[in-house]
Amino acid sequence: MTLTSVVDQALPLGNGPAVIAVDVGGTDTKAALFDEAGRMLGLSRTPTPHDGAGTALAVVTRVQELTRQFAADFPAVRPQAVGLLAPGVVDDEAGVGVLSANLHWSNVPFKQLTEDLVRLPTTFSHDVRAAGEAEFRLGAARPFQNVVVLVIGTGIAGSLFINGHAHAGGGYAGEIGHSIVAPDGPLCGCGARGCLESIASAGALVRRYTELTGIRPSGAREVLALAQSGDAAAAAIWSDALDALALSIAQLAAVLAPEAVVIGGGLAQAGDRLFVPVRERVHALLSFHRRPEILPASIGENAGLLGGALRARDLVS
Image (cartoon, rainbow, N blue to C red; front, top):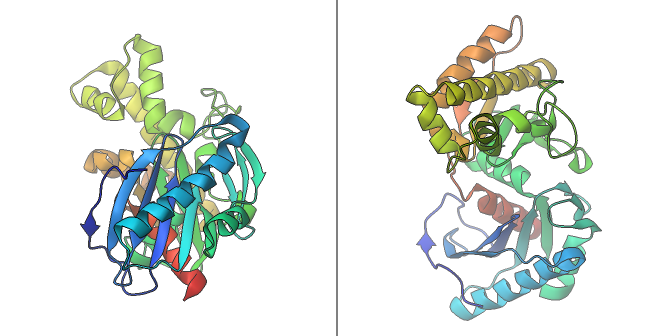
């Protein structure tokens, strides 16, 4: 297998054991080798293997292939562990993929399967919780002990930190995208109505604009551009998204009292067009509550890989 790209990129990981991080997505799988200085080597993006009921085993086999490729490309770097990440419901402590409807697996012992095949100690984690860990330990969430890291892309999920510790809830915590913000709202892919993800995710912006106008935009960025140019349909959809996101953050403020909410993912690239109105809307909803700072994430698109590398290093350091 040939890696799609090879880079040597300085990142704030710091010194530690060399490790491999693999971030499995619904479409693509990203992977990188981190050397003892924390440099990212051999960053690659390859198609995620889909094989129906055999997808889980195909994913583990892909990890083995990537490990062999890294050994061939960087023979002087000897990884000590693997940090494997995946979407869906993930029990980090047990190392089990509880459920992924999109990737067709349930109750798969990924940690054990990978260790058996690759012969390296392995951590298995949720992709967004790992990205949140990178932000918490290295990025914008670092100054806070009580913080929520939200990742808004095709879907929405979060990473929760309470008194300096990650809260996973057996794999079920952090599904903020499936908190109900409009009981009579759009049908969500999960089967419920009015989930935050069905209104405020990048995928929702595209879908709702298409349904309303019959015109399919190229992506959420185009919907936002249309809203800025005065398109009434796009402006209404964007306003609905901002309202839904603000309501969800206000609910988090009431229940968890975070010092900050850090927002990453593709939609965060909207910058002030997202953060300014969301802050205004959140502050208008709150009364006596602790008012969280609402900040952009700082790590970037490779936050998941860094989080996977951090967890892999924790395993062996």
